Length: 304
Ligand code: DON
Image 1 (cartoon, protein in one colour):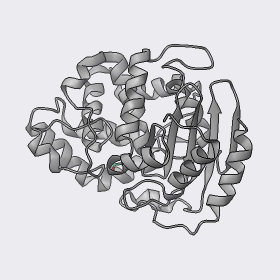
Image 2 (cartoon, helix red, strand yellow; image 1 turned 45 degrees about the vertical axis):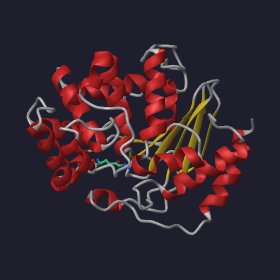
Image 3 (tube, helix red, strand yellow; image 1 turned 180 degrees about the horizontal axis):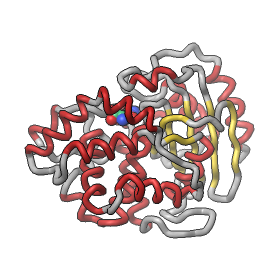
Image 4 (cartoon, rainbow, N blue to C red; image 1 turned 90 degrees about the horizontal axis):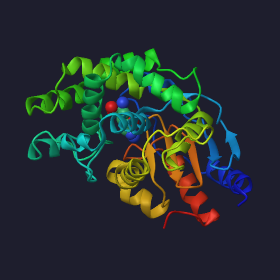
């Protein structure tokens, strides 16, 4: 498969599309990023690599980090984590509160904010130094000691994160947050502020295309079953109330972030990362979605 040729062709095509949407502004620091950035990088399990555009520029991965915090919690605690949250698509926006009351404070899945905040609570309970230990996990996954949080982005979100504060306190009232909400939220905002390039992101996520093992040294991170399940959750819940649309148009498990990044996995083949900050109405990268739709159409490869 000539990925290089297809990516270069689709990149040019999508780059020239008149862009709909806007960058996220509810985290003030994110709105300072040049919204014209557009980068792609693919890494395959058989060691092919290719990037185009702004693929070597760091950006805020935001909700994409929820896959990594889920991976660590799942690795540490196994199936027990599902006592605290579900595995069903929510059909609601990433920051919605509406279902939490009917569901007695149990989030529908780990990728909506409520679910990722419960996962943060689990990690705060089980890690000695949550912020440092989580970063260490991410650095081990990527073999890259330079990966880090952005203090500017996390401070910016901490100053405007009233909805997440509400979600966390609401779940606390149902007994589904065990630690001090401010400690849990601090950790959650920090993990959302992780910065990576498309190249770093696609390389890091390769373990989910490789049955839970890192490709470079074959180190097992998750069991095969855990890896399958995280891919399944990305497929069904990775794009909130646009998850059906992403499955329909792209046909790969994936996860988006409000910084305009998307990572998608083709099990046993590759991880691909796309970054373009302008978002559609559901909070997912407009050009990122368009690119991946064209890419899987032209390569005639998807999991379906
Ligand atoms: O909690 C928030 O609102 C952000 N830190 C993350 C949301 C996000 O990335 C939604 N994804 N498209």
